Image (cartoon, rainbow, N blue to C red; front, side, top):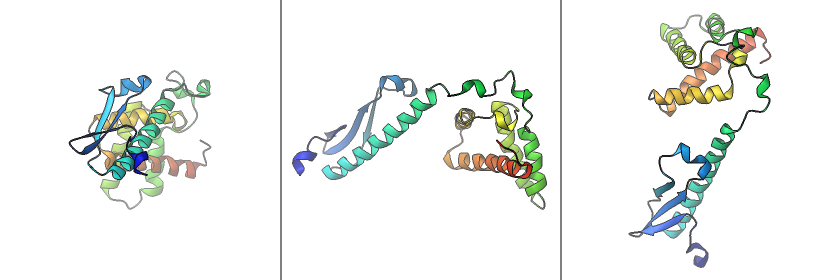
Length: 180
Protein backbone atom coordinates (compact mmCIF):
# COMPACT_ATOMS: atom_id res chain seq x y z
CA UNK A 1 0.00 0.00 0.00
CA UNK A 2 2.81 2.42 0.79
CA UNK A 3 4.02 1.98 -2.80
CA UNK A 4 0.92 3.87 -4.00
CA UNK A 5 1.38 6.68 -1.50
CA UNK A 6 5.06 7.44 -2.20
CA UNK A 7 4.34 9.85 -5.05
CA UNK A 8 1.59 12.04 -3.71
CA UNK A 9 -0.10 14.25 -6.25
CA UNK A 10 0.59 17.99 -5.83
CA UNK A 11 2.94 17.48 -2.88
CA UNK A 12 6.60 17.63 -2.05
CA UNK A 13 8.55 17.12 1.15
CA UNK A 14 10.96 19.61 2.71
CA UNK A 15 12.62 19.12 6.10
CA UNK A 16 10.36 16.11 6.72
CA UNK A 17 7.20 18.27 6.30
CA UNK A 18 4.84 17.81 3.37
CA UNK A 19 3.78 20.78 1.25
CA UNK A 20 0.95 21.15 -1.23
CA UNK A 21 1.99 22.76 -4.52
CA UNK A 22 -0.27 23.31 -7.48
CA UNK A 23 -0.11 25.60 -10.48
CA UNK A 24 -2.97 28.05 -10.94
CA UNK A 25 -4.74 27.44 -14.28
CA UNK A 26 -3.83 30.05 -16.89
CA UNK A 27 -7.41 31.29 -17.29
CA UNK A 28 -7.64 32.00 -13.53
CA UNK A 29 -4.25 33.62 -12.93
CA UNK A 30 -5.79 37.09 -12.95
CA UNK A 31 -7.44 36.16 -9.62
CA UNK A 32 -4.11 35.34 -7.95
CA UNK A 33 -0.93 37.22 -7.13
CA UNK A 34 1.28 34.22 -7.95
CA UNK A 35 1.10 31.50 -10.62
CA UNK A 36 1.53 28.69 -8.07
CA UNK A 37 -0.16 27.86 -4.78
CA UNK A 38 2.19 26.47 -2.13
CA UNK A 39 0.82 25.61 1.30
CA UNK A 40 2.32 23.67 4.18
CA UNK A 41 0.28 20.60 5.07
CA UNK A 42 1.84 20.74 8.56
CA UNK A 43 2.43 17.03 8.76
CA UNK A 44 5.26 14.58 8.29
CA UNK A 45 2.85 11.64 8.07
CA UNK A 46 2.46 10.29 4.54
CA UNK A 47 -1.18 9.28 4.96
CA UNK A 48 -2.20 12.59 6.54
CA UNK A 49 -0.42 14.46 3.77
CA UNK A 50 -2.22 12.40 1.14
CA UNK A 51 -5.61 13.12 2.68
CA UNK A 52 -4.88 16.82 3.21
CA UNK A 53 -3.55 17.24 -0.34
CA UNK A 54 -6.60 15.49 -1.79
CA UNK A 55 -8.97 17.69 0.22
CA UNK A 56 -7.07 20.87 -0.63
CA UNK A 57 -7.02 19.96 -4.31
CA UNK A 58 -10.75 19.15 -4.34
CA UNK A 59 -11.59 22.46 -2.65
CA UNK A 60 -9.48 24.34 -5.20
CA UNK A 61 -11.18 22.53 -8.09
CA UNK A 62 -14.59 23.42 -6.66
CA UNK A 63 -13.60 27.07 -6.11
CA UNK A 64 -12.08 27.34 -9.58
CA UNK A 65 -15.23 25.96 -11.15
CA UNK A 66 -17.20 28.70 -9.40
CA UNK A 67 -14.79 31.35 -10.68
CA UNK A 68 -15.10 30.02 -14.21
CA UNK A 69 -18.90 29.95 -14.04
CA UNK A 70 -19.00 33.54 -12.78
CA UNK A 71 -17.00 34.72 -15.79
CA UNK A 72 -19.27 32.95 -18.30
CA UNK A 73 -21.82 35.06 -20.12
CA UNK A 74 -25.18 34.96 -18.41
CA UNK A 75 -27.83 32.85 -20.17
CA UNK A 76 -30.88 34.89 -21.25
CA UNK A 77 -28.96 38.12 -20.59
CA UNK A 78 -31.40 39.97 -22.85
CA UNK A 79 -34.11 39.42 -20.20
CA UNK A 80 -32.13 41.06 -17.39
CA UNK A 81 -32.64 44.63 -16.32
CA UNK A 82 -29.92 46.98 -17.46
CA UNK A 83 -28.98 50.36 -16.04
CA UNK A 84 -31.04 52.08 -18.72
CA UNK A 85 -34.32 50.33 -17.95
CA UNK A 86 -34.00 49.66 -14.22
CA UNK A 87 -36.72 52.17 -13.43
CA UNK A 88 -39.17 50.75 -15.99
CA UNK A 89 -39.90 47.78 -13.74
CA UNK A 90 -43.19 47.87 -11.86
CA UNK A 91 -41.74 45.97 -8.89
CA UNK A 92 -41.17 47.63 -5.54
CA UNK A 93 -37.78 49.17 -4.85
CA UNK A 94 -35.57 47.90 -2.06
CA UNK A 95 -36.42 51.03 -0.02
CA UNK A 96 -40.15 50.33 -0.37
CA UNK A 97 -39.46 46.73 0.63
CA UNK A 98 -37.71 48.00 3.76
CA UNK A 99 -40.76 50.09 4.73
CA UNK A 100 -43.02 47.05 4.29
CA UNK A 101 -40.58 45.00 6.36
CA UNK A 102 -40.73 47.55 9.19
CA UNK A 103 -44.54 47.63 9.03
CA UNK A 104 -44.80 43.85 9.27
CA UNK A 105 -41.85 42.81 11.42
CA UNK A 106 -40.65 46.04 12.99
CA UNK A 107 -43.53 46.56 15.40
CA UNK A 108 -42.33 46.75 19.00
CA UNK A 109 -38.69 46.30 17.94
CA UNK A 110 -35.87 48.30 19.45
CA UNK A 111 -34.12 51.13 17.64
CA UNK A 112 -31.10 48.89 17.02
CA UNK A 113 -33.24 46.58 14.86
CA UNK A 114 -34.34 49.48 12.65
CA UNK A 115 -30.94 51.14 12.36
CA UNK A 116 -29.28 47.81 11.52
CA UNK A 117 -31.78 47.04 8.74
CA UNK A 118 -31.46 50.59 7.39
CA UNK A 119 -27.66 50.29 7.42
CA UNK A 120 -27.76 46.97 5.52
CA UNK A 121 -30.09 48.34 2.84
CA UNK A 122 -28.05 51.56 2.74
CA UNK A 123 -24.93 49.54 1.95
CA UNK A 124 -26.80 47.75 -0.83
CA UNK A 125 -28.01 51.02 -2.36
CA UNK A 126 -24.60 52.67 -2.02
CA UNK A 127 -22.92 49.80 -3.84
CA UNK A 128 -25.50 48.82 -6.48
CA UNK A 129 -27.90 51.75 -6.61
CA UNK A 130 -31.61 51.95 -5.89
CA UNK A 131 -33.40 49.38 -8.03
CA UNK A 132 -36.66 47.47 -8.11
CA UNK A 133 -36.41 44.08 -6.42
CA UNK A 134 -36.58 42.14 -9.68
CA UNK A 135 -33.53 43.93 -11.05
CA UNK A 136 -31.00 42.57 -8.56
CA UNK A 137 -29.14 39.49 -9.79
CA UNK A 138 -26.77 36.92 -8.36
CA UNK A 139 -23.98 38.72 -10.21
CA UNK A 140 -24.94 41.84 -8.24
CA UNK A 141 -24.70 39.83 -5.02
CA UNK A 142 -21.15 38.84 -5.93
CA UNK A 143 -20.25 42.47 -6.66
CA UNK A 144 -21.85 43.54 -3.37
CA UNK A 145 -19.99 40.84 -1.42
CA UNK A 146 -16.67 41.92 -2.94
CA UNK A 147 -17.44 45.56 -2.15
CA UNK A 148 -18.18 44.68 1.47
CA UNK A 149 -15.04 42.59 1.77
CA UNK A 150 -13.01 45.52 0.40
CA UNK A 151 -14.51 47.59 3.22
CA UNK A 152 -13.07 45.06 5.69
CA UNK A 153 -16.08 42.89 6.55
CA UNK A 154 -15.25 39.30 7.42
CA UNK A 155 -17.28 36.13 6.96
CA UNK A 156 -19.55 36.31 10.01
CA UNK A 157 -20.70 39.93 9.54
CA UNK A 158 -21.16 39.24 5.82
CA UNK A 159 -23.48 36.33 6.54
CA UNK A 160 -25.44 38.44 9.02
CA UNK A 161 -25.76 41.30 6.52
CA UNK A 162 -26.92 39.05 3.68
CA UNK A 163 -29.39 37.32 6.02
CA UNK A 164 -30.82 40.72 6.99
CA UNK A 165 -31.27 41.81 3.37
CA UNK A 166 -32.74 38.43 2.48
CA UNK A 167 -35.26 38.79 5.31
CA UNK A 168 -36.38 42.20 3.99
CA UNK A 169 -36.86 40.80 0.49
CA UNK A 170 -38.59 37.58 1.59
CA UNK A 171 -41.06 39.35 3.90
CA UNK A 172 -41.95 41.77 1.11
CA UNK A 173 -42.43 38.97 -1.41
CA UNK A 174 -44.62 37.06 1.04
CA UNK A 175 -46.69 40.10 2.10
CA UNK A 176 -47.26 41.46 -1.40
CA UNK A 177 -47.58 38.07 -3.10
CA UNK A 178 -44.88 38.99 -5.60
CA UNK A 179 -43.73 36.56 -8.25
CA UNK A 180 -40.03 37.33 -8.37
